[in-house]
Image (cartoon, rainbow, N blue to C red; front, side, top):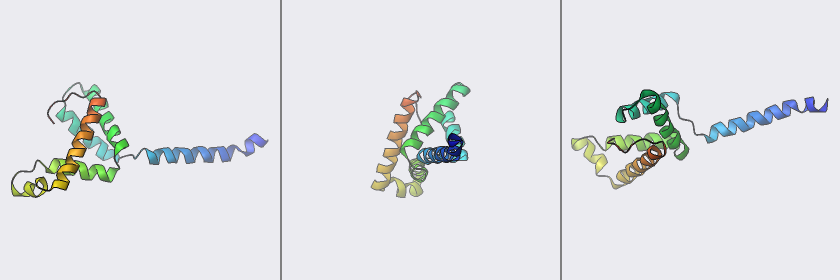
Length: 122
């Protein structure tokens, strides 16, 4: 009877370990994952099934390196760098923003390479 008595304790421990694993995974919201994969697939055309997996791999790599809030900030800065005219100048001309966008681009390039996505234009 003793092994059965410890079963709830073991189950509780397993649940706790799974919760810790999920917290460490720094999981991004599903909608943001889908949007990233769709954008990645537009930027890197190829066989759909293959590119879904490669682009998902890239976001998984980013998620291991960045908290979601940092990802949002860095990816937004990177995209904002391409805004033309005076609106974009305030972002492009800020040295701290450029350094952050560069960090994101380098991290994204590293994860793309590790997921076998070619180094085409982005």
